Image (tube, rainbow, N blue to C red; front, side, top):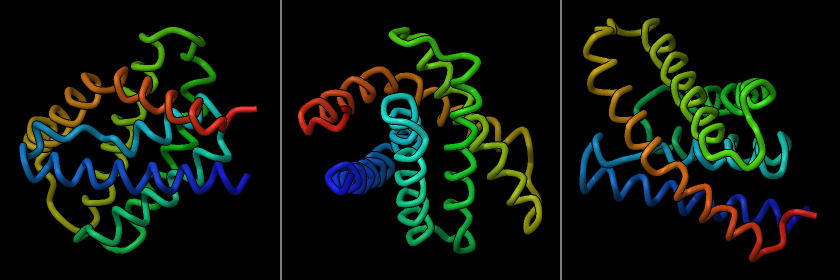
Length: 164
């Protein structure tokens, strides 16, 4: 259990750094939602318990370096981890790349909707601009990298023997 948590925390920190570097180098069109892919993968591979651990740590990392109020990303990611369970129950078929990508698609979409609804409380949100400049790059880059990231995460889990 402790080894699993340590590996999950290390992966979350590493993927956070990769997101940060990609965003700095390429902007919004070069940064996939790697932290979301992490807890989606963990939900599908190890179950909801480890997905929640990853979501909490990822949310805390994003909150520390975000101008949003503290707890925003923690709330979004934990909700999305639970949403992953709901979506995977109905859409996920083990071994299918398409179903993994479909689950990731709906979770990224859910994160966007929750984030925009939280921003509506404080600021005006222009829906067309949010869809064009926030959601579209997130979805495209996340879907492009999803299969690659899932395979690398599975390799890490196999290397550390995280699954019983």
